[in-house]
Image (cartoon, rainbow, N blue to C red; front, side, top):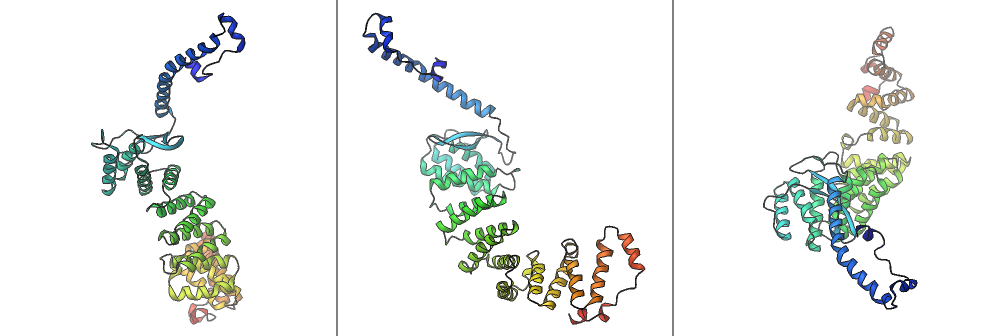
Length: 394
C-alpha cells in the first residue's frame, strides 16, 4: 500500500476489463469498493509516513548547529508557518520553564516576560516553540514574528556567524502579516541594514525606498537613508549616494543624521568633480560643525582636491597640513604626504617640500636605515621659522 500511495493511487479498470468478471455490472461497483478500501488503509499510513519524514528532517536534515547562547541551541529545519508556505525556523530542544501545557497566549506572555527582562536567548527558544504551534492565532503569530525579529537583532553580536538569512526571512514574514504594524518601520529599516552589511546594495536600496514610501515621517527613515548613502559611497556609486544624502538634507533638516548626510553630500560632489556645487556646502558645514573633519575620514584630503581645483592654494595646503598632523601614518599610506610635498613645491615653498620629503624617507621608507644614511649626507633643510614663509604664515 505504501508503494501504491506514493505512486498511482488507484488505477480504474478499462472497458475491456468487464469480461474478466463475467458480469458487466462489475465495472460499476468494483472500482468503488476498491477505492473505499484503499482510502481506509492509505490515509492513516500516509499520516504516519508524513510524521516519520518530518522527524527525519529534524534529526537528519544536515543543518548546522547554532552556537549556544543563553540556552539557545538548535537545528535549522523547515516548518510550515501557514498552510502551504514554508519558512526556515530553528527548532530548539530547550523549553521555557513552566511552558509545557500552556495555552498559546500564556506561552506568548512568558516569552514577553523573558524579553522584558533582557533574556532574549531564552525568549528565542519560547518563540520558536510558539510559532510551531498549529493553534496559534494569526494575529498572535504576527506579534511573535515581530518579537522574534527583534530578539534576533538584539543578539546579532552574540551569534557567530550571524544568521542573517533567518532574520531576513522572519522579518519579511512579519511585514507580510501586517505591513502597518507599530514595529513595521523599525523592521523595514533593519532589513535594509542587514542587506547593506551583507553587501547587497540593490536589496538594501529597495528596502530603504520602500520604508521611505510607506513611512515617510518615521524616525528611522533619515538614519536608513544615511546608511544607504554611505554604503553606496564606499562602493563608488556616487550618483546614487548623492541622491540618498540630498534626500536627508532636503527632507529631514532637523534629524540627527544631518551632519553626516551633509558631509557625505560634500564628499560625493567632490568625487563627481562638481567642485563649485560643493563649495557653499563646505562653507556651511565648517561653520556649523567646525570639527566635523575629525569624524569623517578622508574629508580633509577631498577638501584639498576641491580647493586646488578652485585655485585656493593656501586653503589646500592648510587642509593637507591638518590631515598630516591628525594622522601622520595614514597620511603616508594614502598619499597625503606626497600630495603635500608636491603642493608645497608648486606653491613656491621648496624648503617645506624638501622637509616633507625628508620626513617621508626617514619615517616611512621601506629601508629606514638606508634612508637615514642618505639623509645624513645631505644638507639639512632650513628651520621651520626661517623657511620660505609657509610655517610662519600659518
